[in-house]
Length: 259
Ligand code: ARG
Image (cartoon, rainbow, N blue to C red; front, side, top):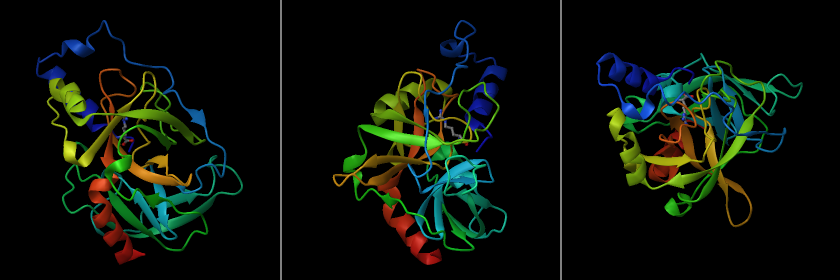
């Protein structure tokens, strides 16, 4: 979502006089693009844009998997428009569908507290390829691809018309948890995958979008969901993603329930 809770957390830290030295005035915020490339239509055919300012992925013909913080509570929901089938949201081939219901992770509170996933039922099946979830945790480390229509820089207050993607590398949970210690955000390691690369990251508006990797057959499979980060592409703060392998059974059950 475009809203940025971690920055609010930082603002509270700053306001409380507990000024973190790691993000002082000597270290200006990263304003350059978040190092991605523009995707071509058809390259990530299951990637979708939500009217809530988030991304998502079609995991069944009429089901979108996104982040919990991108939607409202579980129940009927007619408020979300999904744009799919194109990398350029204004291209002719764009197809849209509307939400009819949402199932959000039962334990969801806010993105930094884990359980950041939700499935959206659409009012119609989109005739587009769907994305499978990784079968287990064996794909949870290494190089992965992330994508979205969100900001291309922390200082850009603009959402993109074209889908961008980039490669990042996963980071061990304990390293990531340590990185976030000064912010007083306790990383929920068992629910999260952290990933980063110098100058490359997801950013505001990318939430809910898929983190993917290719399986042995060369097919994309979903490893994570864009969840949160402090700023974007700051070397000190990795991006945090919902760990699909941890929630696979629950996500599949929720999908079956509404598909
Ligand atoms: N929470 C953000 C959103 O709603 C995603 C932020 C991802 N940030 C990052 N540095 N990886 O769009």
